[in-house]
Image (cartoon, rainbow, N blue to C red; front, side):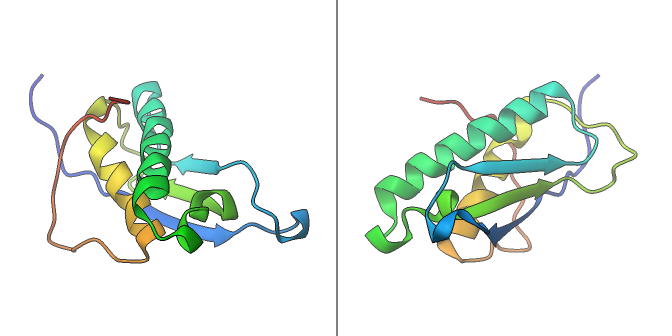
Length: 116
């Protein structure tokens, strides 16, 4: 089958609690009825976003992903979702959090993300 439908990705971050205020390992919680490929895409998206943050953010913001618990949600939980094409959208949502800059509401995208 070809084609698909619009998939919304929601993201939020909460400061980590405990640990004496020290950064910890990055954490990512993904919710929604996602298949294995989408779950893998979310993990790769976090890795790519962390790498971009380390290279591009000012020094005092580079530890964002280590200092926050990250949550990605794909609404409409009753509809199964799978495939690699949401990787770029997930990465954009994560970078939007780290940059503290909302993504444009009229923006649509598709594309797989890789480590290269």
